[in-house]
Image 1: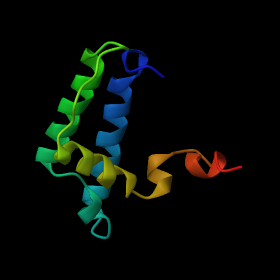
Image 2: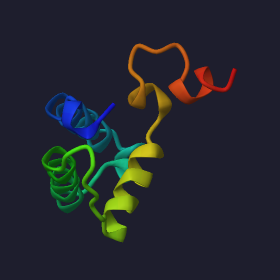
Image 3: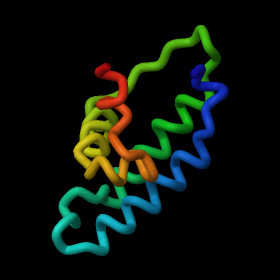
Image 4: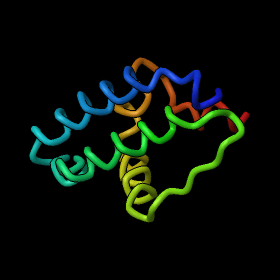
Length: 92
């Protein structure tokens, strides 16, 4: 998928919905993004939307930290409706 063809609005909405669920649950609250992290994620998505297929962008360390935080979310939140996380399906 090229960045310019991604459905970033839907992805961002889904991440926001999941983040709200995590923040509302005492046992998963620490996994939720802070408002500042949410704004930085939106900035990152906007950067990805703005570039063309052959352009390059750099990301700051905090943007990578947010992506790592998202990857720490429970797999059923990352891949809703999937019987197995996608990375497990690709290991065959």
